[in-house]
Length: 128
Image (cartoon, rainbow, N blue to C red):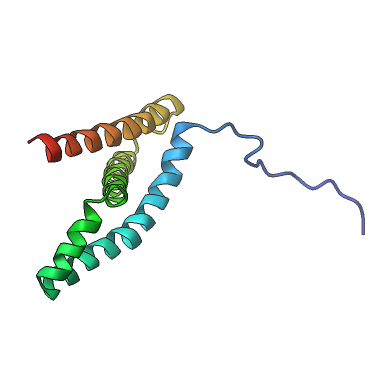
């Protein structure tokens, strides 16, 4: 068997992390997170509402605790990040936005938009 030089594939050590790479990975992670954690919280809420006043009061105590609010805040950010990233993918499905500068700008707008939408939502929850 001859010693032939095998071609090397580019790896993460070759590429620099960019916002479009992060948003692409976050889109997959947030989809899984919404499907698992979001479904678990929704199911707990529905079961508590159907089980009576004591179970619902326990759910409300847990949801309004600092840890509960942190989880709900995180779910809100995850929802908006997945939504904005989905709109970005829908736009890119038209064949637009594939040049590197536009792709990075759209990814940055996705992160900024999801952060702004989360903060506006929680501002309205507390002050409206």
